[in-house]
Length: 157
Image (tube, rainbow, N blue to C red; front, side, top):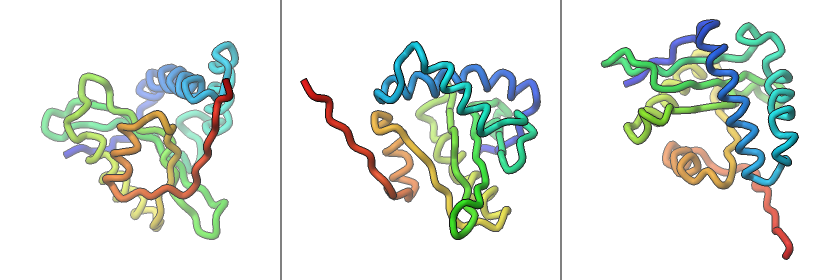
């Protein structure tokens, strides 16, 4: 099993650069952003959602730790949002580091997330996943997540 441990300042600093770069790359791959603007846009997005960094209200950032080996294996970030008829948790980022993938850690992290969300008195978790990320989409489907909105595009030749 895994435990979600609140990120330390040091963990957050290590996380941030890679997360921003990864988010930029995903938007480029999805065709949303030009490569030359992607890093700037990604930083702006993170600044928007985390204006006070690790201390941003209603944002919860964790290091995912394997209980048995006490080894950090990834990161998870969710926020709590009041914009809907009922507050919801929104999963903003889930990353299992490459050396630890395909061992069930993401499934366990999502189960641990459910416990955290219930502790806040919430009963819904939403997320966004890039369409090209088939592994993530398969994971979320397996865990009972359903599609609520679908954007589609066609590239003309």
